[in-house]
Length: 245
Image (cartoon, rainbow, N blue to C red; front, top):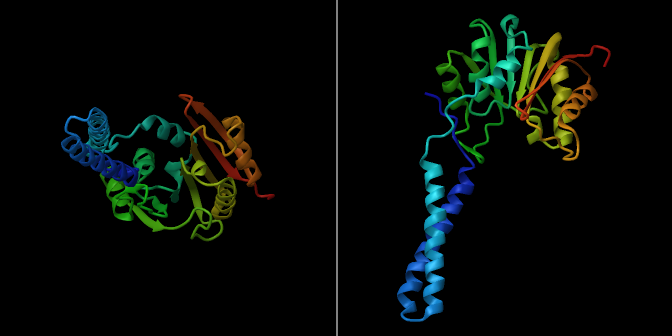
């Protein structure tokens, strides 16, 4: 079974703590309020808010994390990439390994797969190299976790056959996304391929997502060979490095 961590766990724990304090305050206020209607009303509102908020937050923490993988979007990405012929595949921003699991069926056993991420657990509890490796292994994929930054990839020039970035660029500021794409251009082999899976969340909220992501790749020196939009939520792009840039 896969485990992709608990998302936004710090925010949820803070909310649970506030709810606990609200319940405690409500209980004390109810006891001290005696027959004072206003005091009892405040106590009741505090109790109800704390119980409802705390209950919802606790259920979200205790319910299973999103262990399933919606393979449709990863199959769409794999369809535009030469994963079966790649000697080296680098998944940038792999996190706990969701994209690795999604792409695993298209990757051959003799391919060297690098799982690169900053592995920051402030947003996702459990986000670390061990969990990424475990999830990939459960999907039948052997990976090498590497701690690194998308804007300064720890690879030699022209050494990577396929580089993927799944739901990564929109999490970076525009300047960071541009820097990450320029460095992807640097590390890709002359006939290498970049695969991008993105949400319709451009850095410019007024921009049309489809042309926005395409132009971002072109500006970084890529020739976009495939672009697909599906389910109104995801954009898939494949590109090769323009050797004249």
